[in-house]
Image 1 (cartoon, helix red, strand yellow):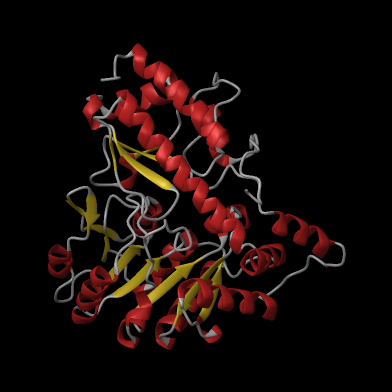
Image 2 (image 1 turned 120 degrees about the vertical axis):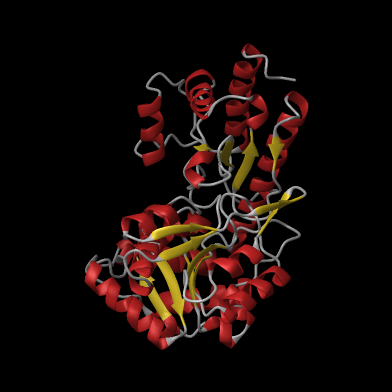
Length: 396
């Protein structure tokens, strides 16, 4: 029997993704929920809600640095959940991983330099590079059967000599849902060391791992690789507190850490807020069971989507979900143009996703579906999609 509430449907009309949905289609039905931006439609863990209420009875909401309690909670969580032993001296707290991507691009490269990404990939990677005046260097993922794999031969070529010395790496991978296995990471690490790369490893989804898979923190492979990696973690995706904007970066190399911190000081985005620290401390200290139940709901929702397309349109390809709560679908068999597909989903089906094109090379014709919502609500969205598919004779 479930201990936590993953069934209540919350209308989050003040959420950015809900507002965007209403901009795209002001006439959406009252029970439509967007399956786009990666935050959750679940009620928050009661331990966070009650803990913040209790804290507000005595707290003064002034300026704050991470407390000893916060640092201890982060340290204990990473050790217990990931066997990742961190040194608090290596901790750099930022107001989010996305700002940290910009700060890293500006810290470790010069204007005009190339920065490597592995598309299709989380679209702020591209923005951080381009808005910083750097060049996107694509090292696209390859398909091996129904799984994406890294093109390590191409990566080695792209980063040889003095070329393209910063890699933005996504682990687990968003949107492909891959949890890189240790052998893959060891081969990646070989290239990183051989070609003397710096890696920003975005591991924000590392707590959301499906049964049967295991996440390896890249920097734990060796001291030599740790000296080249900025590990980016956060409680925000894990515990549905994305709006509190707090992230934990770990930089063991003192030179890299000093360089990054200088850039952070220049940009003015330093640290987070007192309530963000407290919410994260509560989550890391008390919400392990909530997370385990949540992952079970994600698995159930994945199975629901797979069964839906298997029954009604088996030519839609769904990629394995190993980590994250984001499912990657190939709808190219519908033979829409990009514009036609988006119009069909948003206007006819009222089915709101993140469109694959924003994830770069290899994304056109794909859609990313957020599975972090009550199963009943997901069923309603799929039923509406089915009606639109039948009108267009797509159910075959």
